[in-house]
Length: 512
Image (cartoon, rainbow, N blue to C red; front, side, top):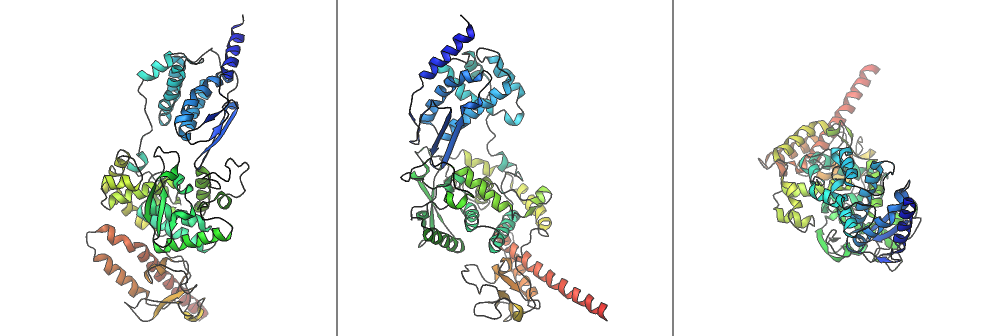
């Protein structure tokens, strides 16, 4: 009998042994006999297309499915898709199908073709092959499992982006945080950013959570009375992320924005248990297929990859330049905010236990990377960036005006901004009469897009006061730097005023 016909017959018989229904760990139901698996787990939408395997490799698909089903039942959806992705990478790199089954030689050739940055894939593939061989499924020689067991299986280098202060994937520097904060505020003020993206940016900085945690948030998770946000916890091994929560106290200005956002959601017909970042709001177009029923706990929630992608697209439009990348726009992947949060905790003196707790780690293992970066390296990076970034990442976001008579509100109640510690004369005006403002006036006004400084106001006196206060902190560089962004903004206002005066003097000379 033809060996190929025998093999195809065996594959057909194996396919018939695949169960018609499987429940995932998260409770989703799917038919594993289908060519495309689509299911949800919390805020995640997962998809595996087995139609990718062609040219002979399709005969191994029944074995692949049967090897994945145990993981589908007992592991996270991301682990299942990672396993299939590792196998797919292995098949694609193996070339045209020629043998009846995979052998250790195939794995050896695969390992030889991997770039150093991709060698972690061997470790991921190992789990799937151990299960494949353990179940006695055709298509994988038993020696493959033994080969991988004997081989050192490198994993992903945990925390490398943090310890090396990677300028693309690692934590932001202090100057980058301040520049990004100002740029996002100004972008929202100009109408370039939607409110939800501004709120998400602030919450990422304030809580350091994973994007999946923010995708799991509901409007009722924020208590406007106590200004406490209950952030759902991920990677706990629970059925879904809304089993346990970690509480964070939110600042007054961000709390006000959150209240406004939640009120708008209610006006648009969303219930109190609606997602804080609903897919109907975040996505440009509504989803093509609805995988969740209205009774699903995560009905209407934006899935994590979509929320991450849409956030990056909006914020990248206003991202400030960074000297660490030759003044290219600052990369704003959500993971960088988490790294920044953990790094800041360490620099403020938090213990490893506190860092692990605030980042939602089950143990201290992953928290250790935040203590690995040399404080001297951090200090050198921030010192080098400060004077370089300031000229491009403007701290002053407002508009210079001649005097109060030329301001937007022209002396209306609440519009005058006065620093009584240096003068009773106003330093400028607020274009919205300080409505809805929770900032510390007048210090924060200089970095606000609503501020309209007056040309001949006592800005130099404000600057001298800020510099004196900075010197009073002495060796506490962290506290001394708190008002550095405001100091830069005042310096920029003074420079703009001087430019106007010089231009007027030049125009007067030419006219004479």
